[in-house]
Length: 133
Image (cartoon, rainbow, N blue to C red):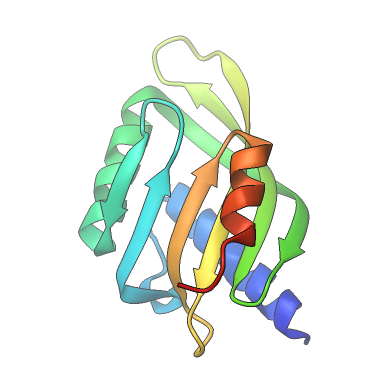
């Protein structure tokens, strides 16, 4: 499997595990950071406790969620996944489609150190293009 495919699979597994409510900690570094740049869950979430806080906040509004991946781009240490999340509102049952791009920064050992989610394609492209930091 190519490096891009390995990273894509890792990022997809992480996003799926987060939406399932049980983030796979083996896929991320201990100081993993997630930052969402839009919506009511916008903010920075650090480590396992941060991800649990994001999940709790997300599921206060949404009853269920499923993700479909639509595209992938890669740089030296990052991968960007375009995806859509289909959610159902907890109180009304209304279904909504959310589109976003998750930009994941990887460590040399193949784990994810940071993930940023954007609903603005140009902001996601800028983050993907940033030089290794």
